[in-house]
View (cartoon, rainbow, N blue to C red):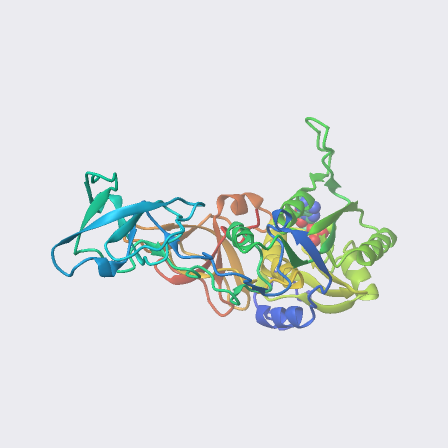
Length: 431
Ligand code: AMP
Ligand code: MG
């Protein structure tokens, strides 16, 4: 009888590290980049703020009208009946009315016009009756008692108050944030410098795709190197500087040379393939020789062999070779780590509860990340269906999916109608 050694076929393997413990080791070993850059706000989209931004101003700076109408003092209007008010001038946006508005008076005002002194309320033009001008040419308006005090006025500081921390350090700047910075007159901000990320794929079987070659024939025994392009695409959404180191052959000396060069030039090194325990798995071997290994075999599927640790100062992720495993381990481990290193505080993927419509097979002992298609049913409930066969080599399952179905380690499969958790790709997949 052949004595079986542990392998990725085993459901329960005591040497596999639980995902939670792996994440704890990962985050406790990472240090946020501490070099800052001062950038013009037009170049700051997607960058991570180094510190809180304190507002130097009230926004709006002065009370102004939210509508076209007439600025009045509410005390000019009786509590029943109507009042006739003399229109003594106009406040345009950008051209304030400079006089004082007394009892019985109004100023024609346009949206954005500064509220004249003596006024507290805007009556919209649709709610007044215009009375013909008197002999001196002064127009007047009739207003009734239904006017609500303070109506249609944007108060000074109602959006942002001076001294308020308006954006928090660790925030990845979005379009609205850039607008807020501009509205405060802040034209440059301190951000964390982008990470340098080096990556390469490994395998004698891999064939690269030349940018200009059309209809490239696949040589016998080879397969196109999809992982390098997937990784480049995943990294492209993350505002990091990438160093594509190509394909490294299954050769120990070559693997050592390229890994050392990558670790010397980048904050993070990512590889695909060669992390199992086979004869041709040189990444494992060289990493154990050169680096500090934090973990290597995880209780998850796909992604059982996921090597993590440091080579010199660089964080190293040796991802599996299978294309789906590359994506799943990237999304679950590499992406949160890159966000964390970049100084971002909001790094956890969104997890939503959903009702599963499919039967999902899975043995207990590992967390599984299956590919799903989620949608709202007729009752507005979030439901999810499997994309079908879940082999780690089927990249099309990732492309068909719009979420990952995360099934807890202890679960022994999922039955139709069971509750599961999903991670929507929207917001998870970069770009
Ligand atoms: P490995 O872990 O190196 O044995 O890789 C496992 C499997 O993943 C290989 O047999 C290939 O089918 C596949 N694979 C590895 N690297 C790549 C790649 N760069 N692109 C596409 N498939 C790959
Ligand atoms: Mg290989």
